Amino acid sequence: MGNRGLGWNPRSLSFLATLTRENKQFAVIGLGRFGRSVSASLHKMGYEVLGVDVNEKLVAYALNDNIATHAICLDSTEPNALKEAGIFEFDTVIVAIGNYIEESIITTLNIKEAGVSKVVAKASTEIHGKLLEKVGADRVVFPEYEAGEALAYLLTKPAILDRFDLDPEHSIVEVLIPAEFDNKTIAELQFRSRYGLTVLAIAENDREFDINPLPDRRIHQGMAMVVLGKNKDIKRLPI
Image (cartoon, rainbow, N blue to C red):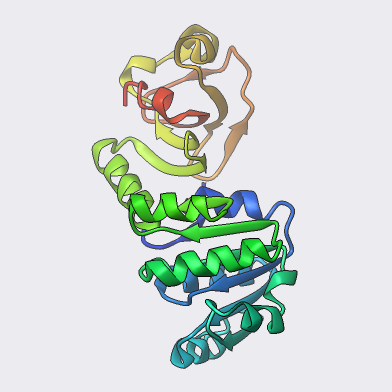
């Protein structure tokens, strides 16, 4: 399933997976830790990324570290500056200012009023998030909360080997098969009717998976399986 580190890897943030399906150009406003991580990941995936920050040093770091296609210094609370930089022409703008609430809200408002179709904004508090929604943010993310939640989930559910959030309510997880499932078939365990989950794969060994296994596939304790479903249903697994 890939990287199992938590940290600030934005692949663990569900919004990134949904954005990259249709969009080709991204502007990331705010090149702090979160903004840099998002920008670097998108750039590595091959997308055109414009990094933006009011801090010249952060812009210089972005250019030196090659985490964006282009990087410029400007005040994102000024609509004219955003327009001149071509920000309003991007498919998606990610407002990663987070810690400066006023600047974050004004920037989000400026971008939405200019007609950008997709704006994702980082929030530092629940109230901040509600305000961002009020001014038009299409999606609000809470990186610190999401990373903390993921860590707590892995600490309390050690049988979970990896996890990918599809959206706030659904995930794909790789889990160790518990003793309760030992030597039973997928059909016997009734994953869909009993747990509301879909079994996507069963581990053949450390590197190979049986994708879309048949109902008569027998599983054993200690093997790994990949399931898809609602988070509340995944939590009901005896792991």
